[in-house]
Structure formats: C-alpha cells, structure tokens
Amino acid sequence: MHTLNQILHVVATALVFLGAVPLVVAIVQFLLVGVQRFRRLYEDRPFHVPRTAVLIPAWNEAPVLASSVEGLLAMRYPRDRIRVVVVDDASTDGTPEVMRRLTARHPGRVVHLRREDGGQGKAHTLNHGLAHVLGDDWAEAVLVMDADVVFDRDALLRMTRHLADPEVGAVTAYIKEGSGKQGNYLTRYIAFEYITAQAAARRAQNVLGVVACLAGGAQLHSRTSLEAIGGRIDTSTLAEDTVTTFETQLAGRRVVFDGYATVLAEEPGDLTGLWKQRLRWARGNLQVTHRYRHLWFRPWKRREGHRLGSVLFGLIWFSLLATPALLTVCSASLLYLYSTDSDRSWQLFHWLWVVNLVCYLLILLMAAVVDPGTFRRCWREALFYPGIVSTCILVVTALPSVFLPLLERAGLLAQDGTPQPLMIVVYAWMGLALPLAWCAKLLTGTRLRFLAPVLLHLVGYGSLLAACLVAAWVQERRRAELTWDKTEKTGKVAAGR
Amino acid sequence: MTAREPGRPETDEELARHVAELTGDDRRHDRRLLWWELLAVLLVAAVLAARALWAA
Image 1 (cartoon, chains in turn red, brown):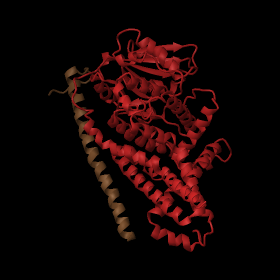
Image 2 (tube, rainbow over the protein chains, first blue to last red; image 1 turned 135 degrees about the vertical axis):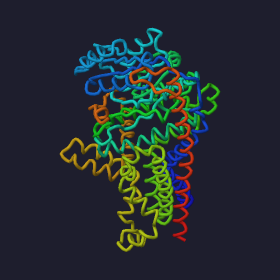
Image 3 (cartoon, helix red, strand yellow; image 1 turned 90 degrees about the horizontal axis):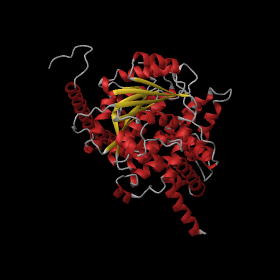
Image 4 (cartoon, rainbow over the protein chains, first blue to last red; image 1 turned 45 degrees about the horizontal axis):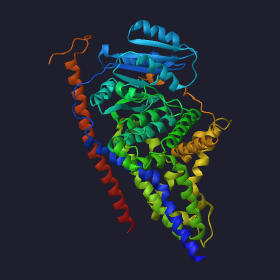
C-alpha cells in the first residue's frame, strides 16, 4: 500500500507540471522570434511584382465590400498587375449593387462572379473563383482574402517579394484586430491574442521552417504552387486554410509569414460571435490533426521536403489542442496531493505558478516588443489575460512572504491538516476555470448577460478558448453537422480608417 | 532623384527602389527585435534574482 502511495505521489507530481506546458511552449515560440533575423527572410531578391488576381469570397458583404476593393486598388502596386475578383455567393443584401458600381468604376480591374446556387461555404466559393482565375494565364499569383480586411498600403509588395524565391509557395500576412477605438474589451483581448498567436508564433514557425496556417484573410499563393496542389481548396473540413497550408508544404514548397505585411480585420465583438468562430476553427484543427495523423512527430519526414513532422512543431500544435486536458489533469493531481500531503502540494503549486509567472512576464514583455502599437491599445487586457483570479494567484505566489501571513491570519490556509475551501478552489482553479468560462458563454443568451463579461474577466480569455476546444471535441465525437457559420461583419474597420 | 508627379504611375525602377527600402527597414527591425528580446529576458531574470535575494 505504501509503495502504491509513493508511485501515485510521483505520478501526481509529474502531472502537476503538465499545467505549465502551454505557457512554456508559448515562451519557446517567443524566444524564437528574435532568431528570425538569421533565417534571412528579407535578403535582397530580384524585384518581383507578379500579375496578381485578388480573390474575395463574399456573402452579404455590402457594408464592407466597397471600402475593401477601393483599398486594394489604392495599394502601392502596379495598376496593370492587379485584378480583383469578387465571388458573390448568392448574396441577398446589396452586394450585387455594390459590385455593379465597382465594376463600372474600375472596368477590367474588378470582376464580379455571381453564384446563384450558393450557401455551400467559403471553400466552395473560393473554388468557383479559382476556376475562373486559373482559367487563363493572366494571373501569376493569387491573393485570397476576406471581404472585410483592410490591407496596409505596402502589404502586397511586402508579400510578393517572397515569391521571387521559387521555393516559396505561399505567403501570409499579419492579421491585426482592426476595431481600434470602436472596439471593446473582447476585441482588445483578441488584439493581444493575435500578437501572441500570429505575430510571435508565426515568426517562430518561420524559424522552424514550417508554418501551421495561412491566415484566411490574407494568403498569397504563386500560381505554380496552387496548381501543384490541384488548383482547388479543400472542402471536406472546416479548416480549409490549414489544409491548403499543409498541402503546399507537402508539395515541397515553403510557406512564409511576413510579420511586416499587416492587414486589419474585423473580429467578433461579442461572446456569441467569438464562440461560433472559435468553435469552427477548433473543429477544423481537430479534423486537420486526424487527417495528417501520419505526419506528427516524424522528423525523418524532412527527407520528403517538408518539416511538418518536426518534434517542436508537433509540441506547439498539440500543446494548444491538449490545453484543456493538461489543465484539468494538473488541477486533479494538485487536489490529490493536497488530500494526502498538503505540504508537498503547496511546494508544487508554488513552483508551478512561479514557472507560469516567469513565462507570463516574458510573454507580456515580448508582446510589447513584437507589436508595440497594438500592445499600447490592449495592455490592460494583456495584464488580465489569464483572468483576475489567476493574476491574483500569480501575485500571491510571487511574493509568498508578504501574502501568506495575511492569509494565515485570516484563517484561510490549511491548519492542523484541515482542508480549507479556499485552498481547494485555488488548487482546482486551472481546471475549474474551463466550465466557468463556458458558463460565461451560456450567460450571453440569458437575462443575466451583463454578468458574462464579469465572469470572463475573472476566469480569463484563455480559459474561454480552452472551453471552446472541449466543446469542439464533443461536437466532433458526436459527428455534429459541419456548418459554415460566417462571422457577422459591420464594416467598422474600414470606417475607422 | 526627381520627385514623382502626382497621379503618374510608378515606374518599375521606382517601385524596385521602394521595395528595397522596405526590405532594409524590415531587416533592421528584425535585428532590433532580437536585442529587445534579449533585454526582456534579462529584465525577467533580474526580477527573479531580486525576488530570490529578498526572500533570502
């Protein structure tokens, strides 16, 4: 019995540290950001401005379409080398009228393709446009973008320069949350998330030589590369961008993230919209994980001309997908140790949160360095990104000599081996925050919806994303219907510029 | 270098020069990023050291 207890203790101790894995992997990515300079992505290459067809799938995009197309045509790029093709997926709003005006204003430069039997989703709409664009030999490159995004004036020039290297098949830009002053707490959380998940993580992927996903809102493909993967976008998953990214690399071409080519996009400003969007992304990622199961953690696949099997890339991919499981296992192990050996559980808990604190501080500082402009706008949300409760735990564990005597005086710590409710909640917090985040989403549909942001601030934005992953996993297990729930756009990004 | 007349499309030479400037800027920014990141790491290390000294 004693030996069994010892074994259980050792296992529980190891499992506690799984709770730090997501943040540690995030830090590894941030540490790689600076190393990008040695990858020589921005070496002088021959001047290259290919004839570029811009493909915009549009379903009821009347509020945003005109400014997006005008913005594109005003970009710094030779007039005779850019064409905009809008694929109108049977829109029922004013999209056809907006397109009539645009095609009349820019004859030959703007094309309106109308699908009368639409509604099958973005990938089908894109394929309709690709068949048109690749139908003649005008286009040397294809830029796939969303109708609501606003390109920086030099973004396309920055992206096309990489295609001078024939080994590069596709380039993606840095999508920034673009609501600016019209945004709210949620768009500012997203703004911070995008510094970490795009500006930092994708630079790290440049260093590793493998990119996980071309941003759906701004992806540039060379014609050769598109044709090599069949000239079509995958329609069988909810993550067609990721599938295209993987297929491009499997075909032996590199995918590059250009962090200086910036694009503003409108992101959901309410929890319901965010949940819908992230559920789709998470389900798509689970499908991709299954589809490419023969690639993960197989570094020898490098011989086939890609690095999708790299161990570090696999760790990055799975640390995100496994976050809910890691946090729950960590909390359960801490509670087990608390019930059997409270001193040891406190020691482990303390070390776990010190590791988390160090990672979190580094992430904050590096995010400020990577994109200072966006960070200035969302630094408050960045400070409370793990949630107010977790931030308090971080502060207490950072300075135990200050706070523990206070808690002890208040009778909130374990004494004489009696478990204290506060300590149970604190130990269980990592796992507990997930169902609470889910409750925040549930509240949005009730009369208590005003409590949803409060709960979200308490449990943290990250917990919401982790809860969304669990929901996606459940839907996938139940083989729930795959529907393309489009994020509603209002045009505030273009209006704010 | 002569200034471009407003409304006149840029020539390939002008555009090539512009892309070269952008590339130079981005390369400089990449170099700066590495040093700023090292500074961030040092800062956190200093905070940790200060905490350890205070606790001792």
